[in-house]
Amino acid sequence: MEEGPDARPVVHQVISKMKNKKEIKDELSSISPLLSKMKQEQEDPFRVPHNYFEQLPDDIMQRLKAEAAPEPVDTPSVSWIDRMLESLSALLQPRMAMAFASMVLVIVATFFFLRSPVEENPTAIAETQEEISDQEIAAYIEANIDEFDAELLFAESDFQDELQDNTLDLEAEELDKYLDDLIDDLDASELEQLL
Amino acid sequence: MKASVQNISDDQILQLVGNPDSLEKGFRLLMQKYQERVYWQIRRLVVEHEDANDVIQNTFIKVFKNIGSFEGKSQLYTWLYRIATNEAITFLNKKKRKAASSLDDEEALLANRLEADTYFDGDKAQRMLQMALATLPEKQRLVFHMRYYDEMSYKDISEVLGTSVGGLKASYHHAAKKIENYLRGTESNGGGA
Image (tube, rainbow over all chains, first blue to last red; front, side, top):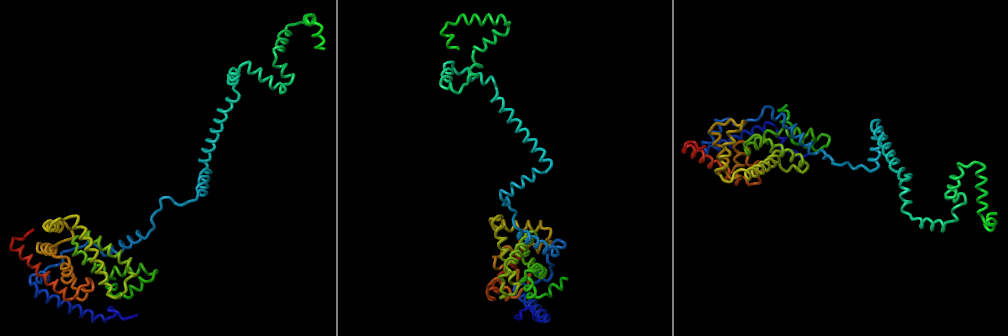
């Protein structure tokens, strides 16, 4: 390492300073005796707060560290999986889990309550049937007669109702008489068809 | 403690600063060794303590950020002086643009600031001296401060300001004469401000 000015002997530095001071003093008194006199007589008028120089290096280091610190990021870059897991773990907390379960229950109950009456509401079916004319129903049955079996046709026919209505109050004798009257009403060809 | 810091050489400080592990220790030593000289240089230019505090902090932050580019061609303290002077001049120019629009305004403002400054104990003659300094052109004011208050050699001032020793001697001569004339003028006019 090269020998710098700080390596000079201390005595040499002191002598150099004194020599410089004397030069400055002589120079000033030759240029401006008034200023020279003021410099000798007056004290420095400037003051600093107590312990200012003891505190200053700490203040500056604090500012340097504050400037070097990374700026806080507004939104940390977290993947959607991390965010989802975070949400789930929050839901697993006892209080949140209770609230979440209650909410699911209410949603499911509401869904079934609103849905089932629409499907099974007889009024709605009746209203739908009223909108279809008898002719349309007859046409549909005729076109799809193979889809209906005998029992279904019998169950839905007026004949069964009439039969039930008529037989409910009939006694055995009355029933025999009713059947005889029916047979008498039939002609030979109709009887052959039935047999 | 203070005396021991002053005995630490610039080379020792620079070696500490050059090593990341001892950077803070080295920089603290640098501040402790030079902060008072740098502060007073700044303070006499900007006058008020609060302003000087801002400027010296900015100065050492700039020194910290640029210490790696210090090549050792000049003495460490002349390099520090140069940075401090630039910071102080930049500060004063900004302040001047904001505050005063004429020389009279500037003088009145300075007089008020000196009156209000709790860290200025000067008598009337010292206030007049500060106001006389404020009337000088920037270069003459800098030379006068470094020679009159900081008692720097022309060689060192030349390193800081990058001006020839002959030019500096002329500037100092003109500055001292103008100040004396200002003081004598205010004296004969009944004291001025």
